[in-house]
Image 1 (cartoon, rainbow, N blue to C red):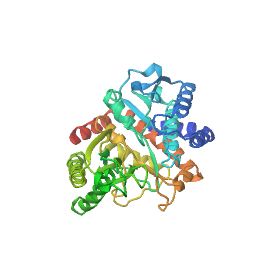
Image 2 (image 1 turned 60 degrees about the vertical axis):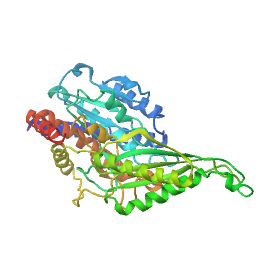
Image 3 (image 1 turned 180 degrees about the vertical axis):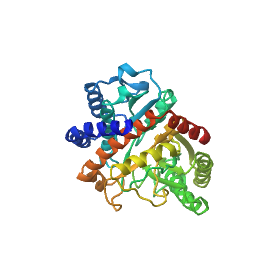
Image 4 (image 1 turned 30 degrees about the vertical axis):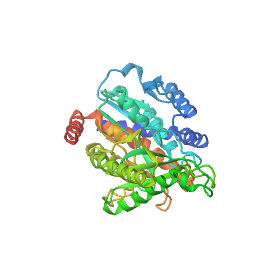
Length: 393
C-alpha cells in the first residue's frame, strides 16, 4: 500500500538524523527553562524547523515562547494536523517530566513527514506550547483561537508506562490568603489574630473532607507564607492548593467544598479570608479513541510493547485537556524507565536522557508521523475522528 511506503520513507528519514535528534533532546535537557521562560528551547526548535523548510510564526497568541511552524506551500490545505511541542522544565529538578523528549519527538515527526507530505492531502503544523507545568500555556492559545482551523492534534509524553488512551485529571490552582492582626506572641497574644491558624485549619478541614470525596479526587497544597518570626502573631499567611478531579463538572463542585473549608477556618480564627482561583485551569483530557487506535497500531508495528492494564489511576493533569475540548486529540505516554521511577523526581530527570529514553524518542517520532500518514491517506478516518469528537462534546 502507498501509505506503508510513505511510512518506510519517514522511518528512513528519522533514522538518518537520529543522532541529531538525540543530541537536540539532550541539549534542551541541559538547559532547563521554567514556564514562560523557555527562550532557548523555543528558539532552537524554530531554527531547526526553518532549516527543514517550515515557515515559523513566533510569539504565537502573544506568548513570547510560543510558535507555529507550517510548510509555506501548504498553509491553507486541509485536513490540518498539529504536532504539539512542550519544552518547559520544573524549578530545581529540571526536565523531571521529560519535556525535552516531547519537543524533540514532535520535531522529528515533522522532519520525517517532509519526505512525503507533498504526496498527501492536507498539511502538518508544529505548535510550540510553553508553560505546561505552570501557567497553562495551551489554555491561553486555545482561548485565542490558535487551534480553530485544526482537524486533529497530538503529542507523546514520556512516562514509566506505555499507555495510549489514558485521560487526565481536571485541575485548578487555588490561592488561599488569611489576614489577621500582629501582636507580641508572648506578652499580648490575646490582642492578635493569628492568620497562620486560618491556614492550618484550612488544611485540617480539607483532610476531614477527604473521606467523603470520590476516589479520583486529589487535593494537595503547600504553605507559601507562614509568618515572619516566632514571637510575632502572624498577621498574614498564605497557601497554594492544587484541586483535581476526573471530570470538569465534579471539579466545580469540589472547589466549592474547598472554599467552605477555608470559610470555616476564617470563622474559627477570626482572620479575613481571600480565596482566589488561578487562571491555570486544566480541563480533563478526552482522548480520541479513533486516533488512539491508529497510534497503537503504529507503536506495535515499531516494536513497542503496550501496558495492557486498565488505563486509569496514577493520573496527573495537562493543558492538553484544554486542547482536547476544541479539537480531536491524543496524549499517549511512552515508557522511558522502570515503574519505580516516577515523574517529577530527580530519577525521572536522569531517565529522560537515558538510552531507553533516546529509543523512546525515536519511536515516538515515527509513530506520530505514521499516525498522521494514516489520517491524511484516508478521508474516512478524518470523518470518523470528527464524529467521535462531536459525540464527546
